[in-house]
Length: 100
Image (cartoon, rainbow, N blue to C red; front, side, top):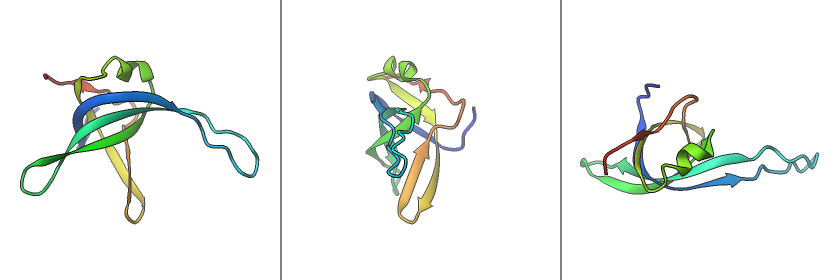
């Protein structure tokens, strides 16, 4: 998977996020698996800042095994509303382990 954008950082945690309950029907949506990565986000001037990013992933085991490791992951994003950015891992993308 080739992506124009990537996030590079350390895998900190994985967890399961329970699905939300629809207020009208009472039906609970499916749970999702999340990974939290302390990523390096570039800033003007060539430096970077640390930013915790939470992403939905398909396979918790893959990321659980990468805990504390430095990885690079293809990244997509969109803005559903002004001032809001949603990040995601493109379907079929996999993390690349980087040297420490």
